[in-house]
Length: 67
Image (tube, rainbow, N blue to C red; front, side, top):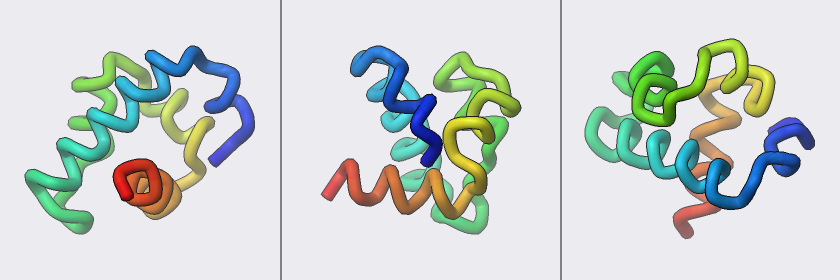
C-alpha cells in the first residue's frame, strides 16, 4: 500500500476497501477482477494501482481491514 492511499479521506478509503471486499468475497482471489473493483469504487485502474501496487497487495490490505 502506498502512502497516498492514507491521504484519501477515511470515507473514500472505506469505499475502495468495501468494493474490494465485495469483489473478493463474491469471486474469490483468483477470479476477482480489478476492473470490477474499480467500477464499484468509481476509481480508475491507474489510481488503484498507485495506491496498491498489485492485486495481492490490495487483497492483503483488505483482509487486514476486515479482520
